[in-house]
Length: 205
Image 1: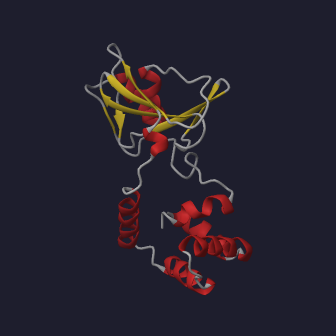
Image 2 (image 1 turned 90 degrees about the horizontal axis):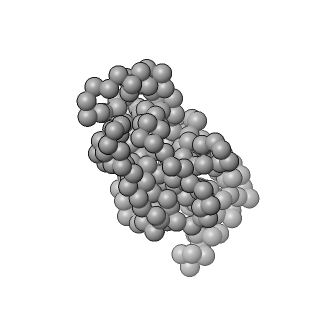
């Protein structure tokens, strides 16, 4: 939300891009909407206080809007279940993790609509949901072990990781790599193309 506010402030100062967006909305709504009306609405959003209460209200409103959107890109993808009997899966408090196989390396925390993205969500100690979203060629995908999935669960954790039993290897992993991926800081980064991305940002405020 902090990044959204920063991008919104920058966009309001970009007269050409702001005019293009206002024009597109007016065409879509089939009625001319004065540019100053647009500006007043988004300046009001920017002027809202950043108290804990207002941030919670904005977050709740965002969830309420997004729950109405059905993601065919994700739903229409390839859904698999990875099984592991010998090395149980763990689950963190930020359990939906993504990565993309790029050459021989993994890029962590990519958006679900990024071509080549893979989504992993452990659902039990012996099973992990793997989703390969639709819409891109997949000549290669990763074939992770439970230990690799666990490592990424730990890297994405905020405060806690849950396991079926006390596992020294998981505890050691938490001490070494716990929470090193932080959304908006070094993963799930906002695209830098304001004109292409701004309509998506507007929908999350």
